[in-house]
Amino acid sequence: MDIHGHMTDRHHELGRTDPEIASLVHAEERLQQDTLRLIPSENYVSAAVLAATGTVLTNKYSEGYPGRRYYEGQQNIDPIEIIARERAQALFGVDHANVQPYSGSPANLAVYLAFARPGDTVLGMALPMGGHLTHGWGVSATGTWFRGVRYGVRADTGRTDLDEVRDLALRERPRIIFCGGTAVPRTVDFAGFAAIAREVDAILVADVAHIAGLIVGGVHPSPVEHVDVVSTTTHKTLRGPRGAMLMCRAEHAKAIDKAVFPGLQGGPHNNTTAAIAVALREAGTDEFRAYARQVVANAKRLGEELAARGFELVSGGTDNHLLLVDLTRRGVAGKVAAKALDRAGIVVNYNTVPFDTRSPFDPSGIRIGTPALTSRGLSEEHMPLIARWMDRIVTRAAVGSEDEIAAVRSEVREFLGGFPAPGLPV
Ligand code: DSN
Image (cartoon, rainbow, N blue to C red):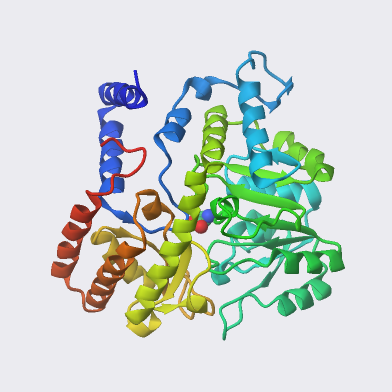
């Protein structure tokens, strides 16, 4: 039976056993087909990745690493993890990959465990400037157990100023420096960060969760030769299952492995490991490289179209998959706009913009990205249409008109009917 056949069988079984959950899964499938998903950290995995995720590998405990497990019966699990590791190493060009972290936050926590002691200083991008919680932000364990100091972006350029980062590093002497983030529309200067880290003898971590697929696709520089550790989730531009990887030079391999297990985690999620392996195989193809190029081309074009309609883009545009839009001049708050767009079938997230005067729960901006829509086959020619829809909705959101929202919603649904989403039942 083919993959779709298996999926149908499993859907049927789920429906028989738990109709309540089955109907919500079905509704989610519909939603993912009918809506324009612009959240830059989301994507659609292939049917093959989805199939690997839903396998009997979920039944197996495998604490330890291949050849050194605490449970027997690893005849199939060990080769799967070795294949995943080797594919990551080959694709990113690293000495060592650990594919066991459950997701990005545990992966980053493992880096602290490997290289720092509680109370040590960590230098990372401030969350409201585009950083991640786990880069030492106050409400995260990483900002509670460690001393977080933060860099941001310049008000005039919207870009990180490496002179500011260097001054901070020289003054604060961090044990760990994070570069990369979750709302960074511009190329990360890994070499510049590396020079600073060397000067203060800090461990440099590139958190490339957002851009991993762009790196292996050849449209963003690789951090590998510059940093001590590369941390990434596997489910964003990389188009894998929800999971993460830590990659490093051979000298750090032992510390990283020990920190992930037994330091932080128990048994790896073997079904996820298999799906990561499948995604890495897919990411090594010419088709994937073309996909990565298209993600960036789409984001640039969407940015131009939005700017032409009076949307203000942080840093003036994008080099990657992501656009951060400041709605202040449009006279509508980020949350109001995001909720109106959602009702119109255009899914974004509200987001702080640098130097935001509003609260993180009701900020001034929205964050959008092109990985998911590119996975459905949309290209530059479709970006003006999306910008027009967004303009119509954001204009109406300011005055609270629902008619336009309903009109756009049906246009979006009809348009997307021509672009079936990977992995979803047709
Ligand atoms: N990775 C974050 C995002 O960008 O959505 C959430 O932690």
